[in-house]
Length: 548
View 1 (cartoon, one colour):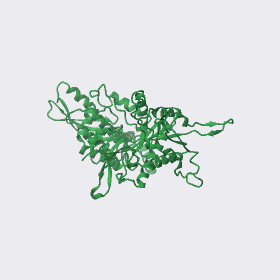
View 2 (tube, rainbow, N blue to C red):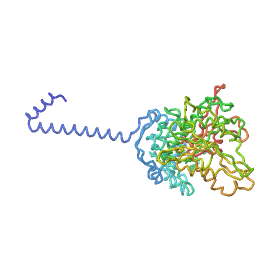
View 3 (cartoon, rainbow, N blue to C red):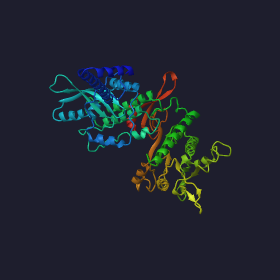
View 4 (cartoon, rainbow, N blue to C red):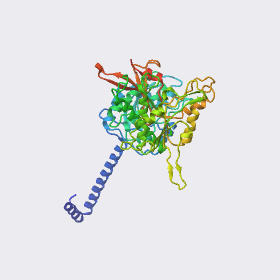
């Protein structure tokens, strides 16, 4: 307000009667009340509309909550320490709402029946008289960050001519309602949101897709109504959700494989090999970093089984294995980590000894190959200082050694990379004892197994078949996958053509099964995600989702 105007009003107030002064005070009170009401409306609007407005769907108030489920509360509290609440971008939210409402209405209806309080009411009222209360359809109205979704459910109630419309919230970390939970089924753990967000490559849309896929997996365990989608349809939907996220991702796409790899052509092109070397090396480095933070354990499993890395195929190339090991070791050494690359030695007793065919000569070739570590080369001095070689056993674990003055004479090994540890047919000894002793001696330092085969083999005295079998299985299962790529074939004896691939591209990504498809007129090939899960996907599920 202009200063002169205020002075004039001040003089006018002093010169007027008490009635005029009272009127001015009333006017001021009205102005203040209008301002208070405006601020309340703005604050109220922000509380209820926390995401950008959608041009496809109208936002609705949230009047119901699924947080009454105790299991949901316990699962949601597992992500303590997460302070970020990032919303989806407007175009992402619009596409998600439009896509789900157009193509997956039955899936949304199953979400309401399985994870919301309306599902509890439906199960209770239909316990004695079926059809008394039926959730007929649902429309997705909003997705609040990566925490919950808001749906408008249409309910048919016996005795009422018109359907009742209910608005419900469903937590994206929800577990099925108590009426559906079985005694033998354990609730699925929520997606580790804080762990995923610690990577700059993870977007909010990626996390939303992971949480939707988790809900889809739970639907396959609890079928609510006869109108629910089939297990095959639900599993296929998880692959479509992965594709949805890749279309909008401005960062590295989760679960997506590069086009035109042409893995049916052997030998592979150099750029194809380098693509796998770089991808595997980055995944291992990320896993080692997370291990140092205590986010994951130190027992790591790395599987890389494209045709040139598959020892059961004629296309197996020992040079590809060595180049992959070199790439991983150099990647870790560049971060000032000392790596020991280990190859198992001869196994057996007396004259009945031998080395697995896959590893024959690997130890010698590994040390003779070009590491660019000589004077004046790119990795000068790396071999012998940051990269060393050894075998499998506790004797090959080097710890820090000091002299009499307390100075370091020998630095410890920081990471152990073990190439293809495996048992042998007919040999009365297993690699497991030596491997377990080495893992024990390594303590909390990362131990990475590359393409291991720790299953028991046939032996004459049954040492690998009966005695201590469960202990060996438990030890083999203690290694967590940090990278996995394996092609899918028609059968175990026919390796071409390639049908697809099963992947887990780093420790943060889900398991994704891809189907290989050819472009029209020989324009190339693409690996299309068809099913995704947080756990390893069974072969029957994958083949069931494949389209002819």
